[in-house]
Length: 177
Image (cartoon, rainbow, N blue to C red; front, side, top):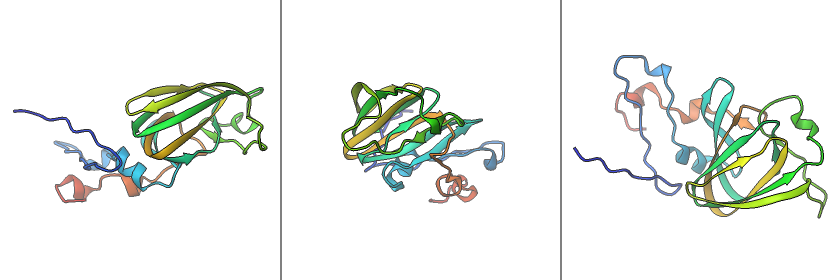
């Protein structure tokens, strides 16, 4: 038997499904990061996977994002397209991130004033991964729609839409979504 790997994108994806052999499909979730990102508003952070407090968020990258920070490291992977990442070393930790894990949106800085010292810029293409260091500030820019995936801890920016994005029982039994 020959298998062919097909890579998805925002413009061209096929939703897969979980085939449960001897269990209840309700014990599993399955969603498609490209489908979730394509349906999200720009810069929404929609959880597509969860393990205890840890989540993987899908983002529809388009235009310029707000600034975010977290009191723990996060990771971003560009799944489709291209996005520029700007990193800043905060002069002091953001008060918003001191009491809760997960990404926190920072207030927009005054015109011309950056949120700290610039640490660098990374251009992420498909398959590229970058560290979002703890207690730094970061934002993204995308000239055209792109898909990003962020590994983080569930926080105030995480959107949970399980009922909308996960496979249902009828889908697990071969019905077309």
